[in-house]
Length: 283
Image (cartoon, rainbow, N blue to C red; front, side, top):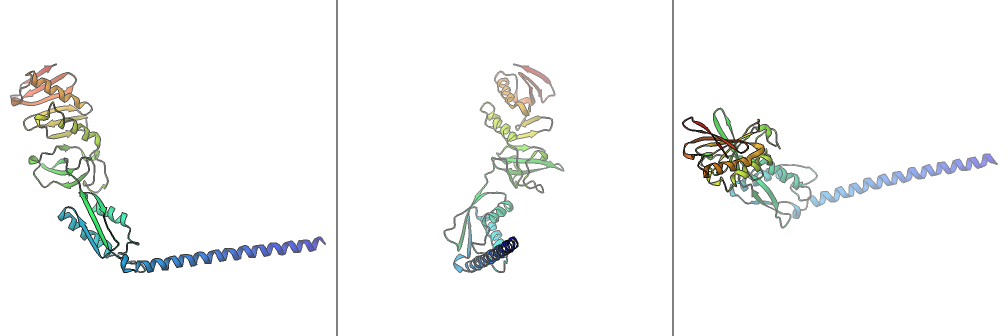
């Protein structure tokens, strides 16, 4: 009797294993069938003419818009996915495509998709506004690049920087924030340096002196140049620029004959006149 019970239990176990195996096969085949149906549906949808991009238009700066349009046309219509249409809205990785366009054209701040339908890829570009010049000297030649208000370096300046009203920032390249290590473009001037430049440029007490060049040194110095003289400051204490206003008002300094003023020391101004005469003005 015990032996008979054991055989019946064994049969039940074998039967349960077969059922589980059968369920796994059904589940696997069903999954493959579902994937196949989805793939076939996706292929059919990608072939629909109504979902295909037939026109690309870019609005904004005319010259740059034309370049971006050609760039996107090459990216979209040069691909071949065999089963899928490369210029179908369903298969197009739009976010990646626009990110590549922004990287290829650093002077573009943003690209907005304003497409009203699948067939027309309608984009609006917004350019970066130059707020600073990042400059450096190579082989005794000055090279400058435009930077926006956030310090993002986006384009080489073809104009003579001496004729530009933008503040010129001289800073060792190793202190720049890098997005692409291979190029100076798409690097960024850190905000800690921009804040010091803004403080001086927008300071009502020295605004009329028209400081234009800002040279940051690794030892912590900041030398600020106007057209006729320059001022030595410490990067951690640019507020000392206000002593210059005090010295001018109290006739300590004659700007017409001033070579430089050293404001790196609290409540004390050292200066040098163009006749090489050194003196000291104390508040």
